[in-house]
Structure formats: structure tokens, C-alpha cells
Length: 152
Ligand SMILES: [Zn+2]
Image (cartoon, rainbow, N blue to C red):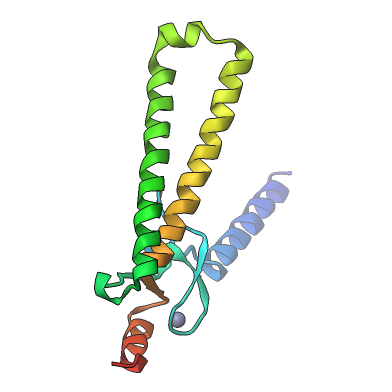
């Protein structure tokens, strides 16, 4: 009986070691950290969609944006700020115990649904804003290629 259990443990250990060796975990810096944007974004050089946190973002100089783009960036910035204010207001109201007491369960639920939608909107607007005001590349090589091939 003991030999049988022992054999099982040895087999299990051998398999564990095998899988550990075959599928090493990627290094920490490749794993997304809290706050990293994991949605794919297309490289401006080769078009490959890469998780945003793994690529290189470069702000587009203001002078390179058309007037229409600048206007849209300004508009998006205002919208992002407005959403952020609403989120802050909600967070303040959640911490306000007296205010919370006056709410029905349904009102609380509605508020929290709205809060989730605001978070989503904020994320989407921020992504839109980033796409308008920055370039994105898989890596520094693609960034260099992009600038080398751009008409001067
Ligand atoms: Zn690329």
C-alpha cells in the first residue's frame, strides 16, 4: 500500500516538474498589472493588433493634428472630465451614510448600474482620446520604421 502511494506521489511530482518545465510562466513584465489596458490596439506601422499595455504609445505633436482633430480631442477631453466628475460624485454619495439611508434598494441598484456605465464610458472615451492624440506601435523598431517612412 505504501509503495503504491509513494509511486503515485513520484509520478505526480514528475508530471508537475515536466509541466513546470514545458510551460514556464511568462516573466512578470509581460503580465498585465492593475490599470494596464489589455484591449488590442492596431500598430500604426504594421497594423498588428497588440494588447495596449505591451506596446509603445507616442503623443502626436499638436502641430501635426488637423484643426478638426484638435477640436475633437478638446471635445473628448471635456467629455472625459465630465464623466470623471460624475464618478467622483457617485463615490462621494456612496460614502455619505445619511444620503444612503434615504435611498430605496431600487435607487441604490440604479445608481450602481449607472456607475458601471459611467466607468465603461470613461474607459471608451479615454481609448478614443488616446487613439486621436497618440500613435501606437508594437515596439521601438516599428516606431522607428513609422517615422522613417513618413513623408517629411
Ligand atoms: Zn507593429
